[in-house]
Amino acid sequence: MSKDKTKVVERLQSRITPENRIFVKKNLAISEQIVTILKQKGWTQKELAKKLGKNESEVSKLLSGLHNLTLKSIAKLEAELESDIIITPLEACEKYKTTEYVKFKVYVPVRTSVDEMNCAYVEEETIEYQPTYQKMII
Amino acid sequence: MNIFVRIERLEKFQFKKVKYFSVHFEENEVNEFYDFLNRMEDLEIFTEELSNLLVWIEEIGKNYGAQKRFFRDESETADVRALPPPRKQMVLKKIEVNDLRLYCMVLNEHVVIFFNGGNKTTDKAQYCPNVAHYFKQANQLTQKIDQLLKSGEIRWNSGFTDIEYENNLELEL
Image (cartoon, rainbow over all chains, first blue to last red; front, side, top):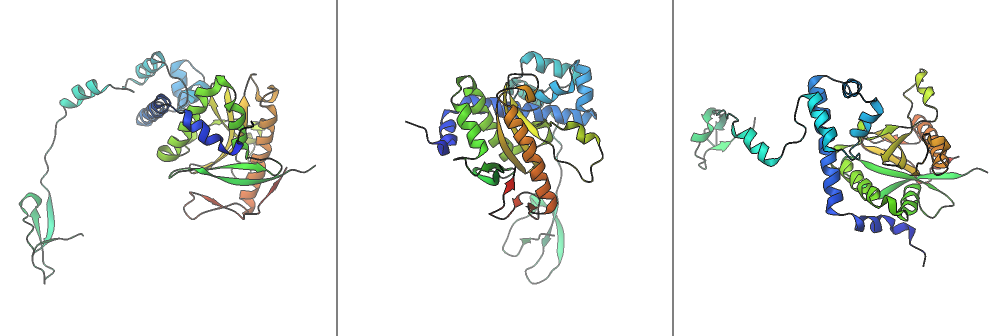
């Protein structure tokens, strides 16, 4: 029996495994991270290729989101970029545990009466939203 | 003999950030992208690659947009780009998954046209018995579509996120 050529997408989509989805999503996320670091450093792909001892074409393959990146090549990239590309959830917890949080006081304009357009700046935490008080978008 | 081809919107591949299209040869049952998928579907060596490719197309379409880095240049007339063209010339691109090649044209970050492709077995696409024909065809199609963009027969929508053209628009190869 000949196959229905118009249904090829449905047939192929039914073969997609969770592993395929994870592979592509992580691959693209890694590519995005590398490009972000390059931007921060002001490096071009050509410069990265030179530092890695690869040609530009190989680097563009690494950034395509479809290349099977090895841990070794990621380690090499992290070493050259002097920056993390991937970080595990445990490492992330450790890293961000020491993050300092700064508290801001926020003052928002509120209408002081329903009839008048008078406006007062009030610390957001202290606002009691009574019927006569309304948040005013400026 | 002239072959007539029309541009076909891939209805199953319309995403927030990228709209995908293909080309349909008048004598064929399906468009070139579907033909590529049908032919590769039977090759067991590419089961994994095809699954990854479909997920990738969807992810790019939903979350990233067709950014330059996701596609690689593949132009037979690459040296043409060294000359100063009157206006930016579109070049043929390829999607590479191991030895699998899918030729395409990236109009901008929001519009991509898929052609055909196959299992590339030689260093140069021009000499590969599997892809040489599709490679040459994709080059011709790229040039024709570029001309249609220049002539205004294919137009951009106001946000440059999609293209518009008459339903009966045909290219002649």
